Image (cartoon, rainbow over all chains, first blue to last red; front, side, top):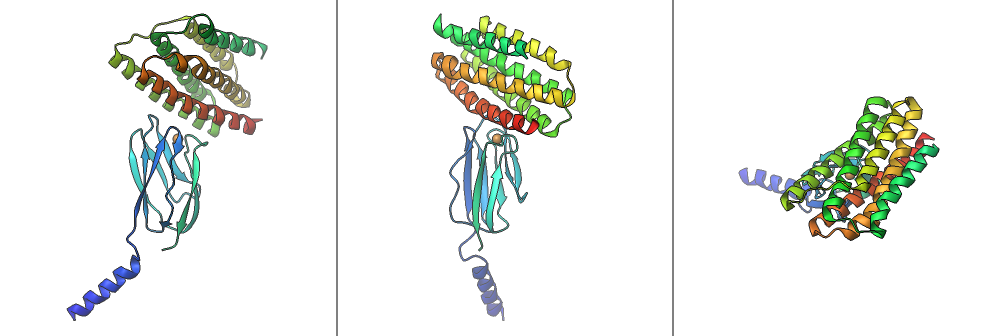
Length: 104
Length: 171
Ligand SMILES: [Cu+2]
């Protein structure tokens, strides 16, 4: 019985994570969002790392995430849904980009 | 309007002049950059007292936040380097021009203020960015000062673009 439960748990775990959720890093420096990660999947996280001396934000146009990053601060968000997600900095609207998130 | 352009031209001239005549020293460069930052913080505070336009207020908040942040860095840097910023003709001209602009804007309200503030921000950032690019950065001797000025130029170029987009929307 215990073994069966374990097997079920293992199967559930395997189904939930064909690959474990990955953490990606996007660096903000010199008034730009740096290289954006490819192969993003729902459930993955992105750590936004601000290396500038001024504050920035990473804000999704669909409002699925919105973090304020003080100078030299890093903050992590989780990608909750698939599709393209356009984002920008609320303080510096010329800073923008788009993430492509695949279903898991 | 004519007065504003005339003053802008004088400041541009004053800022460009040291390159032709005599290159500014690091203490003078630091003073010019710091003064320009303070001027824009003051302008932002004035906008926050007068404007009710959400986009203009958000922009003004960013100007205060960013220029204060850069000036904090500048102050820390000159203290670390034991450099005393030195007043000069350029920073004096910038300060005089800013006082005139502040006075002119203080008589305006509503959309007229918003348009004038944004137009002034475009002109100001254009002048300062030109000075950074052509005079201040090329003449900076200390590597850290040069690097800070370069960060400033990237930042203020974005501010200029931001203000230009706002001006389109306010027309
Ligand atoms: Cu930003």
